[in-house]
Each structure stands twice: as structure tokens, then as C-alpha cells.
Image 1 (cartoon, helix red, strand yellow):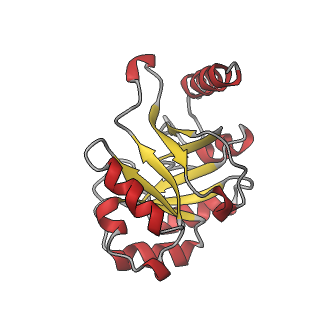
Image 2 (cartoon, rainbow, N blue to C red):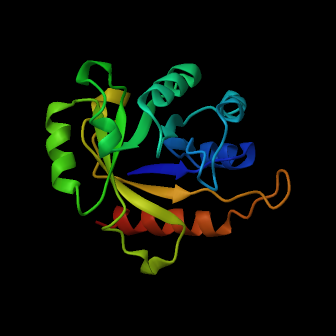
Amino acid sequence: MYFKLDNVTNLTAARWAAAEGFDFISFNFDKNHVDYVSPMVAVEISKWVVGPKFIGRFDNACMQTVCDIYDLLNLDAIEIDLTTAEKFSIADTPPIILQLNSQNFSKGLEYGKYNTNVFSYSDSDTLNQKANFPIESFFIPSWPHLLNLPKIPFGINFNASNEKEPGILNFDELENSKEFWKTKFEEK
């Protein structure tokens, strides 16, 4: 099972994720999102973290912005919606986590058949939120070989906590959530 910590805005959360064995850390580059992080802050955070692969999440961004930040930060992959993905030419597409929902899930799977750079699908509509844990969505591997990942069933996206003060975060909820999901699927 993969674990991805989304919306990382600070070094404390990123280092915690690395220490906990998270596979991915995601920075949100949507300037209208409450957890927006500038590319320069993301660069500084990534310099101090070893282990996880770095993902850039882009909502409401033009293709050129996506490509520029992807290249500037040397990201491992991007997370974008289907509409943005369809604007890329197949040859120029970096590794993608494709954000889908119930309305476009079938169309997204079809897109993934023809674009081998889609290594995972993120689906927020099918997640049972009753667990009341800080989880955003499931993601389903498509082509794990792109990032040299083993083929496993799926992963879970967790939302990072914001610092109460510099260096001070409450990780209890995230740790409980990670253990809940890890135990739940190790039993199967």
C-alpha cells in the first residue's frame, strides 16, 4: 500500500512523512488553495527530506505553469485533473496522478489506456469519509513501473496538518489514521 501526504506546506510535516515511511509528499501549487505553497518554499523543503518522491498538485493551472514548476523542482510526478491532462501531447506528458471523480472516471481510465505516463488514478468520490480521518482520497496504481514502484493494490492520500507554531504539529490524528488503514488492509 502506498501512502501520500498531500498539501505539505512546512518542513515539519515533510520530515514526519519521511520518518513514517510515506512514499510520496505532495505540494499544492494552486494559488487559490488554502494550502498553496510557492515553488521556492517547496524547493527548500525538499532539500531537507530524503525518501519520499515529490509530487506537484496543480488545480486551475495552465500547461506552461505545470511544465515550468515540474522542471524547476525536478518533481517525480504531477497530479492534475483530466481536462488539464488532455491538453498535453502524449510525448510531452510527465508521470501523472490523474484526479478523477464519478462523472469522469470511465473517461479517465480510457485516457490512461493511451497514455502510459498515467501511473495512478486519484478517486475522491468512492472514499468512505465516516472514519473521520484526515484522508483525501484513494489512489489506484496504473503503471507503477514509471517510478520503479512495486505493483500493489492501491494507496491512500492523507492531508498534512498545518503548524500551530513553527515546528509544532499535532500528528496524533495522522498516525492513528495511518495505522488504521495499514492494519485494515494487512488483514486481507
